[in-house]
Image (tube, rainbow, N blue to C red):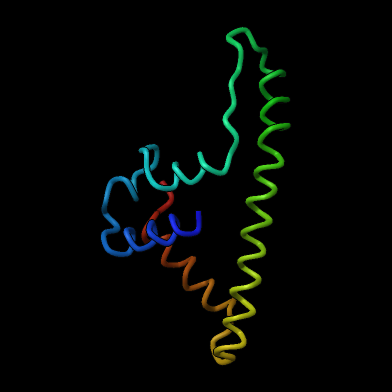
Length: 109
């Protein structure tokens, strides 16, 4: 996933108007990454809403927890490395700059 995300970021930076990077709802690299990280799920045609909710919670909960934990760990590692490398530009500022750029590349609909 990290290699794919690096490629996705490069593509977005090179051409932010690409439909597969920018347009919500299209098949794109992020969809591929999510599909790789989350378990496949199947439901019977006659499953009730309660059964679907229970299965989604049981199967996706642990995967989403792992994804969030990985992002938190990566964030902390990057912040520590950045703070050690350039104390005049704290990691919080770097992350705020990245967040501002992300909003420009992928605006909220």
